[in-house]
Amino acid sequence: MEIVALLVALVALAVGALALRRADVVERRARRWAPGQQEAATQGAERPAPAGTPPAGVSPAEMAALRKRVDELSEATTEAASAAASAGAAGGFSRVSVVRYDAFEDLGGRLSFSAAVLDDRGKGFVLTAIHGRSETRSYLKQVPPPDDGTQRELSPEESMAITQAMKGKRS
Image (cartoon, rainbow, N blue to C red; front, side):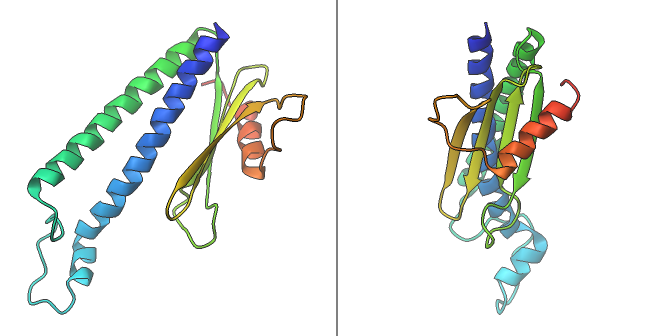
């Protein structure tokens, strides 16, 4: 039963991580359409484009497709969270914590994260996604680490997520 709960939680976290990544891309595109950003982008032009107008080269069909994809990702994330909550109610993982941070000095927005998903005994896993300019890398580590030394040490952020999950209330 624990394996099923672990798999459900892993799928939920993977969907959530993908949704966060996609939301980041959509957010960056949306910033270009914000009224203040649009005026700065069209400096020197005769008239700035109205707020909400897509930048040159983005068709209304592409805009509609992006909006539809964001809605689909949001729905999938909600379903995955519901499935994970159901698995937790069945005696699985009940302690979750997420620590967001900037993995690199030249990037802002705290887009990297470590998420600890544990049961009441402190067993589970930590999922870490390190966001860079051109890629995002994901790491999964067992908690507590295996005794055979096959796993790298926990990062400070991963340790913080575990500590917060164990101190927090049951979800």
